[in-house]
Image (tube, rainbow, N blue to C red; front, side, top):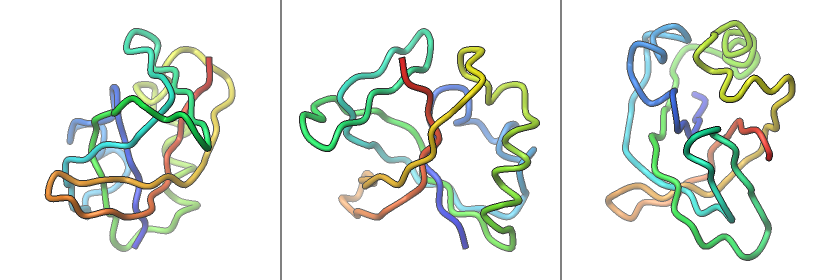
Length: 110
C-alpha cells in the first residue's frame, strides 16, 4: 500500500484511474509556506508553513511506489506548469476527520 497527497489537476478520478484502479480517496490538506493556484507551484518549508493546501489523500493498493512514479511521468495532466523536474517528499497530511498521516507529495517549486 502506497499513500500520496494530490492537489491541483490530479484530484479527479479520471486522472487517478490512469495510475491504477484500486485506491481509496479521502479529502485532506497539508500545510505549506505558499501555493500558486495558477501554476501549481508549492513552497514547502520545515517551518513557517502557514497556508492550507487542500487536496486528496490517495491510498493505492496492489501497486508499487516505483510503478506509480513511472506512470505519473507519462501523464500529461500531471505536468503542472511545464516544469521538467519535480520534487518528491514526504509530508504530514491532515484528513477532514482530524486523522494525521505521512504521505508522499510530488510538487514543483517556483
